[in-house]
Image (cartoon, rainbow, N blue to C red; front, top):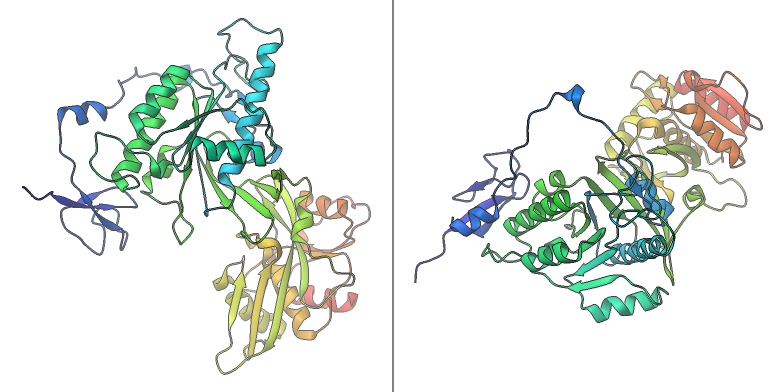
Length: 483
């Protein structure tokens, strides 16, 4: 019996190599080549993986540009991340840690969509087969008569039904298919023609045309490619659930993220009741939007005021705490930055949770050089409350003021906020959309703000005293004068 020929496939770019190498010769990534069985080039396989027919060349100015109609899912926070709702023919990839609530949220969304489709059928509307308007939202799924389909590859239909009862979705009309073979899933999609289909999960789906095991690079890449083609050809919106690696990235080849239209990450601590859904890529909406959910006995519920979960409930101000206003997509959020400065040994530690650790070291150097505050013999720990991750540099000023407060042992004034980017020369640079940040802080009852001079509003904001500064040492002086 002939031995199967093996090849090594890169998980980043999908390139293949006949032998293992530490560095991928195609994309240059290190330690990404994994062993798999080479697929035979049979006529059936070539026909199965054939490319789409070429379309006619058109001038860009002659192509009609219309907004995509969106169907709300019934969950405001999920619609925010998706850009307003699901899009006909769109492909969404959502990943997250096991047990974090991906299947729960999608089952709730499908049930809400199904109820909307059933309601549209029971009301007087356009005739069968009528299309939805070309722009705006489509709240009842007009023209989408297929309903919903939940394809489960990790659970049985009975387990899905048990979860729906637990979530209080009594009498749900969502159709369920327990199947992992790609050809049968595609045949079911063509026969039932649903408006929305969930594949849970893409790592469990396999094609008979490939000999590798489910979850391998080749299977994930090919199955996702054919499901994407089916979505574009039939107009069904397909939502793929993806596994994540121990580093938190989506498992499988990186090309998987390039195939789909939207990539969502489900974040949060399994020991906490709050979950974040973050958009990393969205061809139909803004990126870096987040949706905030709370896990309850009846499933995930949207949080209307997410700033409340990122602020600790202190009866009185405490040292080392500073509140900042960050932007997540189009939404301003108030986040508490906590710092703890303690005496360290010969090698002091610098640890940050939710913030960039290298940037923390830079801010400590700026604080020493331009404000005369030395932490070289101190352990410095910085944390963003609530498990949120802050990547924008507008958090610099709040981090420095929290560190200074902890080092001095004196709390910042009650109702105090700060934001601004700090440069190596000690200057404080403006943050984008500063007016929206200040208005959000005033709306939540904050009364004192230290902001970059360029972010100072031309008209005063009621209830908010604003101190505009240009340099780090000015910010330190303002805080000392307020204490």
